[in-house]
Length: 209
Image 1 (cartoon, one colour):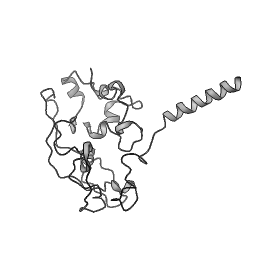
Image 2: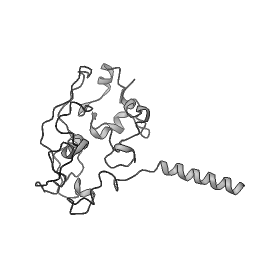
Image 3: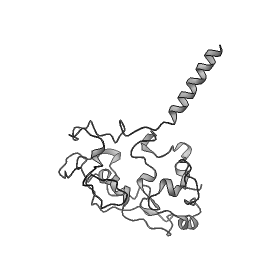
Image 4: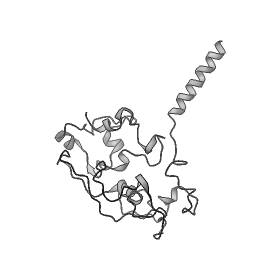
């Protein structure tokens, strides 16, 4: 009986340990190694390269994919506080939209510019971002002070490790696509979220409701 209980306890501990293990891009929706248009069979090369990277966009680590040149219709709302300004997508958001706006072919990497395979369906956001969460705006203490519906990102914990919203979710103090989405799937959460949105947990990280 004691042995059975011990084995049950050890099994439970192992299961709990596995829950905390991160996933990887392998096998995720960003694993393009088996796509017919990716003749290299590699995963990382679709976005990154060790040599001759495009360094024109900040926060674009060794970038290898063709960048979008689209002009976007931006989110606007009377509830958006004027203490910050929504700009054309920048940083990591421009990288995401270089596939997700549907204007750049998926295989347009490593100097290729004549691809024919484009993202489709709900993953194609197009260039109209008015119905999507705003991105590329400064989210700082000043914005939080002007809008009591937001937490102060410099002091409020993100729930990701022991960091604040500012140092774990923002990029140069800006809200970008990667503030909510983990493109490398290291969390293993659905929709490549940075953290779970059960009971709106992700939303309530920033929104004081």
